[in-house]
Image (cartoon, rainbow over all chains, first blue to last red; front, top):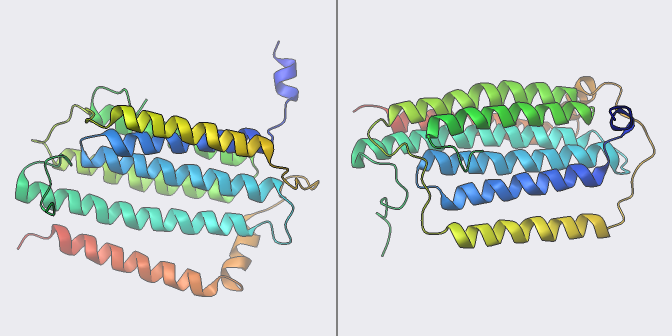
Length: 111
Length: 141
């Protein structure tokens, strides 16, 4: 029962499908949640699935410099950290003014 | 799990769990350095930021509830899964015959210094700008 599972190797297609499922969950969370922090969690999940795809391509696909995918993933992590810091600061600033971070009620820019 | 968790704080904790799981997948793809960075930055720093943001907004709704867009979003994410799965299975990827990487940290360091020096500098400037911007945004005045 366990032995054939241990013999299995991770293939490119499996990792790409996991990345697609994570991206879909992230976009669902980002579109449907009311709390701004939950929306940000969805965005982080999407960035993470993109990282997973980049690493999978760097591991499996023919390339003259395969390590470039890892470098790109590290840049994505850097930008995600900066984005999370700014977005959470924005959420706290909005909460100070409006006493809510419900994204359905923050419609200051609606015309 | 982030979708169905009743409380927002539980959703954050489950998100940390999935970050650690993705780091495990990175290790199976022989990307050890990126896995360590993932645990440090995502499961460490961003998780702390998220928990801070939840704790600093005590009077807002912590129910982790959804809005009116649930059905269109479900359709959209289902379409994404179906489309990407179809493309992945139909495309002929040029899979390389080489094995897993021996070391990644040294090669990533070399790549950051020689071909990616300018993006590296831009990323550091971006981090400084983001940190100063975050401090300015939440400063009491």
